[in-house]
Length: 142
Length: 142
Length: 142
Length: 142
Image 1 (cartoon, one colour):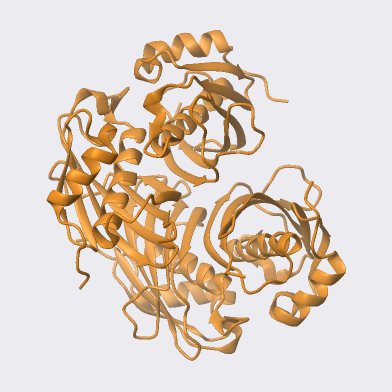
Image 2 (image 1 turned 120 degrees about the vertical axis):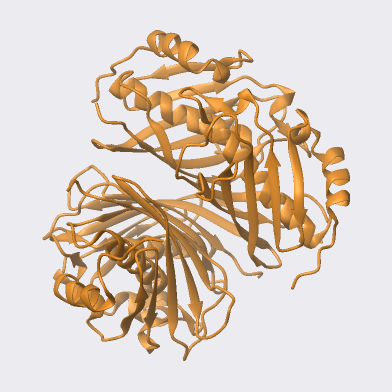
């Protein structure tokens, strides 16, 4: 079992300072992060919808990218500016208006230079994922 | 050579009505669209930056997704609500602050049910792409 | 819980007839398939190695693509020629020589036209995946 | 313009020694390689077909992966064992039986640690691609 280098409180303090735009609308919360997985919740707002009343793709891509960053930080600590190298998303079902979006991220590999993870995106309490993401982060040299 | 079903003016009118949020900050313009390719420009704003002063991943993913939608509409016309099925992005270089971001999209295939395209993202006038996207849209039945 | 439309024996009979090349070396076995998941085993052979003694990328891509096809058939039955539309693979660790390769596939979504799944590739009895795949199949009209 | 570190003759000599399995059937030839692009031809054989008489996905994935490796070697020279980190393929059209398959690769970025490229796969003399690949290679430390 991995040992987290940062607690949820430490992650939120670091990210509010470094990434204020991710929280600018006060709508993303880190529910858990343990060095291997994390769970984020984006509270429902009309801004996340696209025509037809479904959750927009950019909302899901941004949240998944952020979740991958959070789980990575929780594992390696605030050791510099990791950047996304690749992100692949499959949209599976429509997210429903009125529902929060949840992002459950999991590290698949942490190497010296690359971290790979997957993120499952969920709408409200439905167990069926609305999107699935795999992503690679490039980790700067210590 | 493909014949465009919608002109740039028609695309902008349709999209302003259907996708007002894509234009809400007045910062995206359709420079060209001909049924096979399109070119979009997102004017520089500080909102597109992430820490370190580089253009954020979500900015690029949202713009690429929108460019793919614009080139598809320019080819097939406003025949209903096409939705993204898959998007894969490789981040290549840092976009520079102060520079517009350009998205050059091209259809690779238009089938009855799926359209596949690629989008090259550029920063200002540099010829070196800052990101490369491939994307699949699912086309609803006529 | 999904109900499988084809048993492992039925899948093997169908695939030996339709896809003899997948079994030509007698080295792939379907260990289970239940309409939602399947597990395939490719027995170790020197042909699966690349220089440096690691399992080659094409070996893993071919096995993952086949596993996705098997789980899809187990769900929908032999209703025609589904074809891969997209496959994305992240290589995570080196597969070790002398070890079988296992592919554990899972359907993430089965729509009328598209099926999306993920495949985890494992080397021998190690719990750490050597590669992770997501894939989309296009399902022909009935 | 990039200067190639290895000529086609040097690449073939290196690869026949290091990757004999890629040439084992004598069916892949490097038509050109200049440090930025390369063109490979895989001569038609029945082994590349899948049921329905179309070119199989694994044939295309293996050829694209190899083309990406060839263009990278032509740029950086034989400096050790680069490995694929990610490969994403979109299948676009059916490759026709009886036709050679061509792979046209192009480097999109060469960094210190990662190289990203795209590969267009063609069937015979048709200008319409049968598949499109993006791929990331991890470059070992010098």
